[in-house]
Structures are given as C-alpha cells and as structure tokens.
View (cartoon, helix red, strand yellow):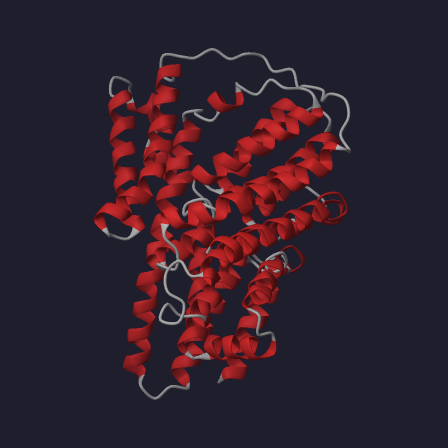
Length: 426
C-alpha cells in the first residue's frame, strides 16, 4: 500500500510541477491525486468506517483553511473593485532606481504582512506597470517584489498560506510568530536590496498616465472607506481568534459579512445595475476558485499519507539520517523552491506532532520562515512568483540568472539570523 500511495502522490505531484508542459491544469491533477490516495488507502484497510471517520476529521481541518482563504480573497477583490489600491500607488513618485527599489521593497514587505504575498504581488506588479516603462527594468523590480512579498508574508499569520496553515493548526501563535520572525524576515529582504543597490544606476522612465477623475458612484471617500475597512478587518482576524478562541475562519467570515454591509450601505442610493460591479457578489465571481480547489486536492492527498503513517515514518528517517533539526527545516525551505510549499508544510505538520513539539516550538517558527521565503529562489517556487510569471511572462531562466542568487543569499541570511537569535536569547 505504501508504495502505491507514494507512486500516486509522486506522479500527481510531477504532473503539477510540469503543468505547463503537459497542458493539464494543476487543480485537476490535485483533485484526482487527493481522491485516488484515499481510494487506495480504504481499499487496503479493513475498517472502512475508521477510514471515513479519519477523512471527515481531516476535511474539517482542511475546510477551515479553505474558508479562511475564500474570505480573505473576496475581501481583497472587493477592495480592488473599488480601486482602493490606487490610493497606495498614488504616493509612489520616486524615479531614482536605487531609492525606488527600496521603496517598492518595503511597501511590498509590509503590505504582504497585512494582506498576503499573492495578493500583494498582483497589486505591486500592477503598480510597477504604471511606474516603469522599460520592460527589463520592470522585470528586475518585479523579481525583488517576489522576494519582498514572500519575506513579508512569512512573519504574520495572514501573510502567507503556509504560515496561515501553521497558525490554524495551533503550531504557532500570533504575537510570538510576529516577534520571532520579523527580524529574520526583514534581513531576508535587506540583504538582497543592499546587493542590488550596487548594480542600479540612473532613473526609471515613467509611464505617462492620464489622470482619472472620481465619479459620483466611486468617489475618493468611498475608495478610502472600503480600503481601510478591508485592511482593518484583516488585521482584526488574529485579534478575534485570541479573544474568542474560535478558529480564524470564523473571524474572517465575520469580517466578510461586515464589509458586505459596509459596501451595501455606501452604495444604497445607486441603482443595482450601475453598482453591480462593486458588489460582494461580483467579487465572489472574480476570486480564483481553482486555487481553493487546488489546496483542497493537495491537502487531501497529504492527509491520506499522514493517516497511513507514511509521514511519521519519513520524519523518523530524517531524524536518524540528518539528525540536526535546523538542517532538516532549511532543507525543506530549499525544497519549496521546486516543490509547492503548501504540501511541504502540510507534510511537515503530519510528520511532527504537537505532543512532541508544542505550540511556538523552534521547529514550527523556523518552518514558517523557511517554507515562506525559500520559494523565492525559483520563480515557480511560490504563489507570488507564479503570479508574477503569469502577469509579465517572466522567463524561468532569466529569473535564475538575475534574481535567484539574491533570493538565496537573503534566505540564508534570514535563516542564520533566526538561528543566532534563538541560540542567544531563548
């Protein structure tokens, strides 16, 4: 059974990695892989009721992640529909390349911590299209955006899906992860920025954009109301979990309902047809549901491997073969440059248990950092990189030549920063 399960998962994962070559959407592959893993497991297990019970138990944990993502993505889409992010882009007027790349890097870093790395990358790529005319210059800045978005997303519970998974799984807590990972994450960004500062010279050529005027239906006041309401709601989700002890997706759904009410109220005087594109229903139609289903499929496959005891066996093998926990976690982070960090973190959650490593243990904190930032090393290693690649048609080997070495030195600098701080102060 073990060999068959690993073969199904391996073939499915290879199909996901080479999605562009085989021309089959990775979501379809993930769903098939997830179901086939459970079919195989139940076929070789005598107690069918026990398997079904395990499946439903895992589905509850998986659903909490999916509903959280669904709510967050809808809120961001609603803000974007109201051109809320244009308020941020209006304040970036720098043209000097060195200063601009630091500005863009830090905006991306902190925006990613509040929103998430995928959404932030989409926003920043859209911003850079308005700021930089020369394609080669723009691509280089976008490469830094990928590094900054992943670094910024790693140190907050809502900034990266893998950190969110660890947070929802109670492996990490909100305040602790922000305290422990902020400095390593900022180092992960600053080292590449220092390195590129010696390369960049001159000014960027700005894109000439005709100014737009606000209409009665979408005034500046309404834009700001939706933007700041959306950001405030996202920030309050961890607070909701801390005070109510309910799962984070409950706070996200509450926030989604509140923002829905807010948008209904501010547009109540407008005819339905005129405001249709500004409604939450319209935002729901725009969110990337295929990503939600991809997470469902891959997490179901990982759950099958965990239930079958395969992940625990792998954990024991790694402990005996490598031994050093820091090297194991850093290896997982480097692997996330090639393998999607979602299944890697899900596998790690199955390999190492809270009974052995309780909440806020070294392993979970370091895993959140490494899995979140290691994906920057290759363009296909993170959702942020894939989004940038799709939007600007970035060549895989161009990224390796221009950006990968920057991401790599940032990754190791941040990793060693975390290890040193942990050894000295904790």
